[in-house]
Image (cartoon, rainbow, N blue to C red; front, side, top):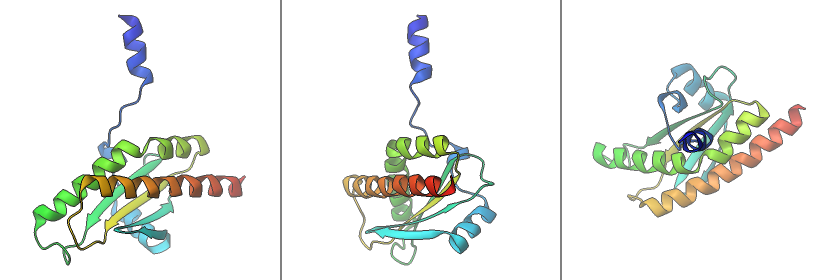
Length: 143
């Protein structure tokens, strides 16, 4: 029984809790004002190293109402992005903890068609790999 308990503590859950979501207006404004961005179509990601966010990694998600008039479509896209991010964020989260940096991310869906999970998951994976490299570079420049 105790072996199972220790195993469950060691394995981290792939969650996306409230503290991991980028919600503070000040942080979001700072992110878009001073942050950097790049695109991996159909997603655009903005990122910034913000020292006053709660956790080492926070993310926000958005879909344009210009391209998707129905809120159900926008909510579906955001749900797909959150799920793909939640399943693949572990390496980036671990590196931000190891390098002691606080990274804020904001994903914006800029495509004009409703995506499926495979496309969103693939593109989020590419973005997170690129961000892992960016965090490594930034941490080595600061030391």
